[in-house]
Image 1 (tube, rainbow, N blue to C red):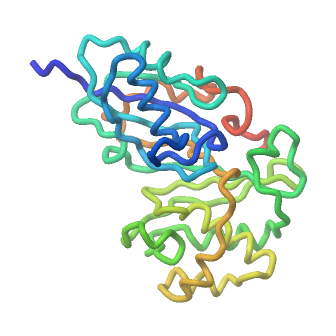
Image 2: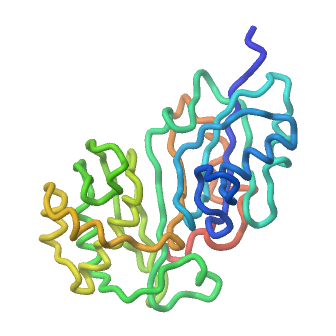
Length: 270
């Protein structure tokens, strides 16, 4: 019998506390904090993450997978990784089969907060910007469907077809909005570039036709220059097939273990 099993960990973090997810020497990154936390409880595993978030981007649901001894207490992982208001664990479970946090995932959901009338508690977690909600919503809808998004993500990401299932703007309060985004995969900065271009269209800095041309493979420079700032973005949820989902029992509306504060809560009206 294999002495190890695959553990899946649902963790959250505030992006402002880290220089992104990926290891960057000894800079304070999420990956470094996780590695140090695991070492403190005797686990030398190098976990696989569902996705890498940029500097300043938050995660309500980041998923890690790693091999650990079969008899190891999963409760120890939660205590080892918790770092006050910066990083915490919602759930740690043994995963079925050959679960891989990244490759087993079928999709990801993001939320982005923005507007000019931002409630005080949300100020560190939203983009303060004017916008035309009608034009912005129409621009966001252009990205829905299957496209080559090469002009709307960083050039280091692979060029391939990706599907955005929905990208919608919701009014949460007067002058305060939330974008909901869901797709089967995203290139680097893609969510922020799609939102940035849509806001820019509403402000007259670009046009709906320019976005259409970008999706058709033209106007690389004009479309990539619009990138919404990171503090408004949160990786909200990672989806897995029902038969492979370690957290099927943990996806209740009020998940125990998540901070009951921005940016991890749903905005009233959103």
